Image (cartoon, rainbow, N blue to C red; front, side, top):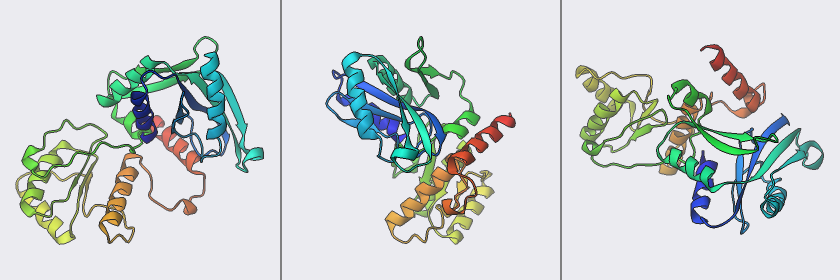
Length: 281
């Protein structure tokens, strides 16, 4: 999601410029990014987003300038096995992007609506468009979300907590004041968020949980306390990293194990997870 937010930000900064959008549409073998990765190329040379580990972007930007000059989309293929020592082949579709497309996408993101971005590259359907999903489906969000480029809201007084949560909402309670933490959890836990993290020792967590249970507040599986993965964190920055990593693991349904220990490639594992979710419907 961070790439998408970066693309929207650049679009808003350049309302009068011609823009090209490059989309990774096919992958054979290994690839740093999966299909759907996008990069915006502005008329002045500015870029937002990424398509690889950095080895393809310059050439894609050059081809994008040709697209901006001609107004015609094009497909570019890269055999990364020969040129970059990787083990795959990728196809990238480059198109002149319409202002309406990016405005529509920005509007849906701002409203936190579930939508699809479809890149058609046939002769009659070339171009990207936004397709709304009128009835939000929690299972779709679980399969496809990426939680980078988050919006952050910080509140000191839990009485000011007034949000309309969705499947992309996570909360972290960190005031270290028992009363404020209790008031925050009393409001947050009934929302059944997928992630509510509490910073603090286990003994204090147990006291809060007992107090909440006495009042009839249900503590569900989305409550993580103490919050964070075991990264040996000590400093505030390290603790923040461990919590962000835990939220990413929960939202992307990852295992949290070291990639070195995996027996199959990361992308293959994600595809298997997607198929498993589909088969359960």
